[in-house]
Image 1 (spheres, one colour):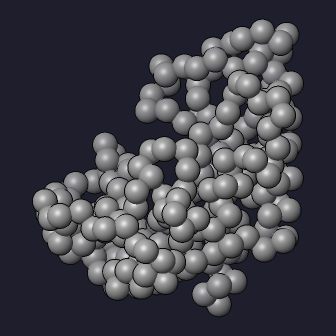
Image 2 (image 1 turned 45 degrees about the horizontal axis):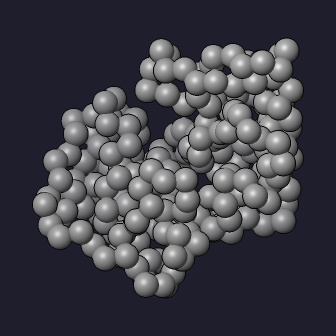
Length: 225
């Protein structure tokens, strides 16, 4: 494998690196880094994100902070079809299910992660082999007042249900921009959460995701789609 790419020293450097990748296939980028390309993503769901992190010099890894903490920027890849429509929801972060008293939107990991995002579109249908998918033009995004209001409203509604012991009642239909869904490699992974009677229950870990309607509108506004 090639020597890891250094961390970008500025947002401008990061954005320029991302722009240089635009138009390249994932196979070409993986070849530059000396990485094998999986035949499909069934067992390698995070491969595209990891490849882009490596190619752009991200440092956070799986830690609960932005991918470029020195720059205050989170990296998000977003798979698009040929019509530039998002193919899936976007994972934001793991949701806290315990010790949430006093947690506010302003101190939440969701707000921290989404305060400034470098979106890197990856174009290719679900049946397109990973290596043949193309990297699109990047977008550096900060939520508008309206977008943050939507995100905050959804987050506060979801966190209130969690605090009331109603996590099992939350479905992907809750929220206009943000949703809560199980987040685990398999259904056997369980964690503690607050139950209806205030005690602990065992449930699947949850994650916050951006809905495709929200990300589609975001891309449409910025790319004039």
